[in-house]
Length: 285
Image (cartoon, rainbow, N blue to C red):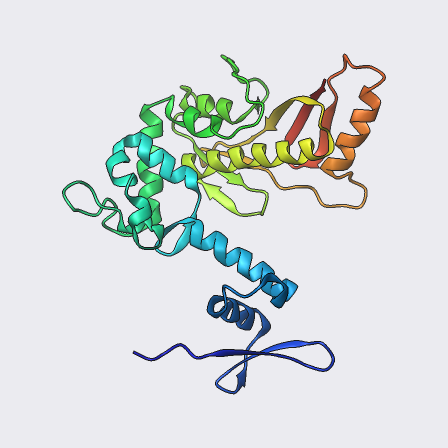
């Protein structure tokens, strides 16, 4: 077996960092990644800032769960455990690279024989359609300041919280609809599983950002203005942040509303014009 070629790092007189392999210069991104993989135990001060970022990304990847080598969120492992794969899941850390594609049942058969992550999503989707409490577990987990809500109707295409989306998808009028969510990165998440988890991640992210500038936040309520494509039987939701000089950032609005609220603590200020299909109501203590 051929040995990995040694990656050499050279710093020029001008302070530029360059990487070479077998006498050939590598692209910066490739060079940094390969150099860090070969030198994971150097003293911190011996890394460049770019190499430190690569090292952090490498450690995050190595610690994460994967499917066919691609990092996946821990919540998928927890959902599979709740679905009855506890015996297989408890040994997941013994799997090579913690890769779920290698997961086997008690009989030694692969749980996902086709080797596609879509198998995981379809399995979770199928369970969620028959078990209304299933995604409540998934979405409540890790949610800061979660409060149970009980709404029987959904008026004017508005729902409050990811939990309500579960009820909406289970309602008689929308049980045959698909969910398509554009996440904060602009990626489309199709289906019940990926869509609802994207909304969950959005709520956690927003809550963390709000709490970073307002320690006295008492309640964050999300109001989603979803859209319907009736012909395609699809519920559409866009979670992207609006871009524009005229728009305040989320943090800027929270700070302003916090100052305004100090004069009238009974108000519930609203954040709007930050995210495409979302308005947020706040309450300060």
